[in-house]
Image (tube, rainbow, N blue to C red; front, side, top):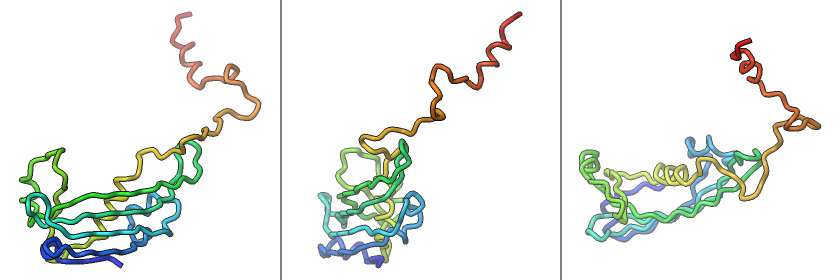
Length: 166
């Protein structure tokens, strides 16, 4: 289910939406997963932020199966995101807001109908590490069995001999 709501009344009425969103329907996210058969648990609460703007608190929980960059094994990335977003009426208004790293909420353009699933997908994508790795694993050896590092021939060693004058 993809919750859709009017962000202006949602924020002012302190509404609550709880949902489970299938990871497989999040196409951009699913491309980074080993198996997109799970789901994200979502809790979204309408509110007015500290400046009186309609806003939402978005809590997302998910277990994302990704591949470890070190050993190529399966790795479960646990996501627990809790963020506040406030709504603005247009792209122009969004672009006019100065970037403030101390601002507790982030702006989102809200229209008459606001779809929650794309925001949840963005949160999950942003939570993925660039290079997922187990805390303790070793990369498979790049050397063939029985070959020692000192005995290994470097592929460009011959080029160095060509540069030397005879």
